[in-house]
Amino acid sequence: MIGSRDGELTPAEAAGLQAHLVGCAGCRAFQGDLLATEGMVAQALERAAATRDFAPFVDGVMARVSMARPPGLLARLVHQLRLHPRLAFGGALLPIAAAALALFIRTGGGDLADAHAHAVLLDSEGRATTIIQSSDGPVLLLDDDDDGES
Amino acid sequence: MNRLAIACLALLLLPAPAVADVPLRVRIIQGSRQGPAKLDPRLADLKNQLGKLAYLRWEQLDEQQLTMAVKKPQFVKLPDGNTLALTVQEVQGDTLTVEVALAQRNTQSRVTIDKEKRIVHQVTGEKNGAAYFVTVRAWP
Figure 1 (spheres, each protein chain N blue to C red):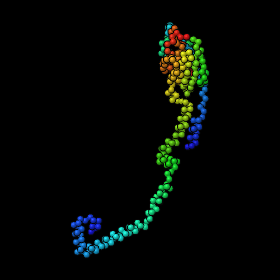
Figure 2 (figure 1 turned 45 degrees about the horizontal axis):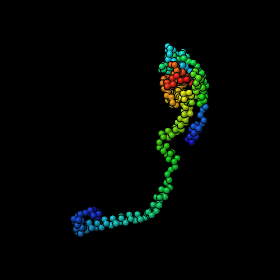
Figure 3 (figure 1 turned 90 degrees about the horizontal axis):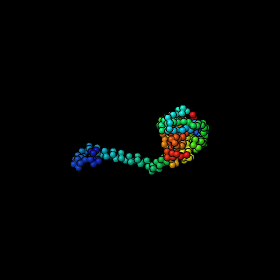
């Protein structure tokens, strides 16, 4: 009987149910109560839904979206630093590292300067020059094309 | 944070510290192919470098102690009458760049060495089996 409401019964089952209801007063009474209950529930839901006015719904949502502006850059940065404490620690060291680098460059020193040791830069015109490197320093030789010169 | 950034910027913008004068030991030496091999005792510290060359006899002819200001050339008279110009182009820590200029040969050499090293530079062409060299050492 419950399945018959949604058309789930085959035609033969539906015909059998109708035939039974004709001869069974109890089932007819039960079916009547069932239909009445369904109708009441449906109407009650519709009434409950009707009490809510959805007309300003869209306007309300849009108003809330406009009020929820994105946080500023500083607020986002603080938020990210709270989420990543290691990043915050590294960021705090960055100015110190920059200062150390500046000092290193200004004093011109250390291993970088050593890396340039023994570099030989030649700027000559028309004359070839031979360079011999040694552990004590470079030896630079002039070409021999002017034997007897001077 | 902002104060640190300003401090770093100020550090970068500060004028560079003045570079002090650089003392140079300059020697004029002669290498010769003739005669028995001999190294002037005053050139013992150059034995490693001079030993790489084909000259057998080495003699020191002149020695000068120069006080060089950066980028200010000083001139050294050579035995053949020509002039050698020496210029300290740059000093960085314990390294310096020296320019050796030979106007007669239209040649300039810029050599960067550190404190303990020496430059040996031929300054004249070979004549009768002999040639002149200059050796330069900073902060001797």
